[in-house]
Image 1 (cartoon, helix red, strand yellow):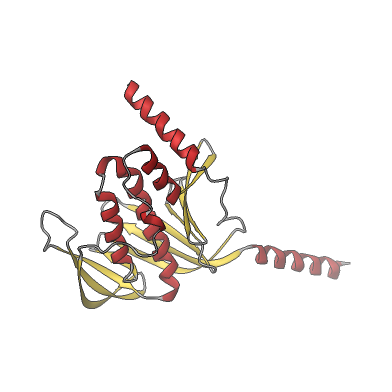
Image 2 (image 1 turned 90 degrees about the horizontal axis):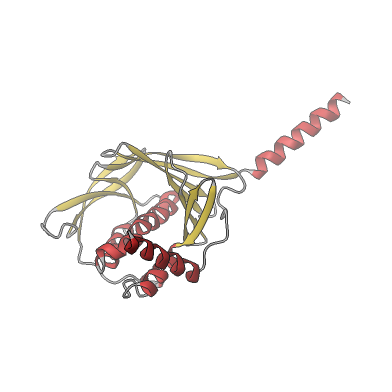
Length: 241
């Protein structure tokens, strides 16, 4: 009887282990704001990204990026491309399907390869990028870029996360939004940034295991029509104040 119990416990442990999903966890440090950004990657390339200590997060599933807002314990989901489409329907078009295009429009950045470097235990190469500062086009920002294959999905979700911060700002920055997205794409086409001027830096990256539902959408994504309605309602409320 005791042997049967031991075998049952072993089988249960095996089941629990198989339910977990293997992958990689990367932690970045924002030196200026003393914040950490956590990126978790499933072996199939899906990823989850969030600032440590916050409830909201992003999910990259099958190449599509979703924004997950959590309020009062209730999640709301929107696909980034749908948010951009909704903005173009509420305001004069800004993105015009930019996020759907296979190739981004060319940016005006000038990139020069530099020396080798290391961050978070990963090796890379420094690239001097000029043209990011419109007030001083010759000013260089140094990006330490890694070409490690297992960091490729980290770069993919990090790029989409940055886009997700630009898209909602479109009403304020207008045509600068697609230009910034194109510049971001130019940089990430080099590989995965692991150090940006010493201000944003990979701290560690290593193997990890995640719960079975960790990379699943917590709710049905909002439709473009629902997003448009919410944006219009928000604009009305702002005008009434």
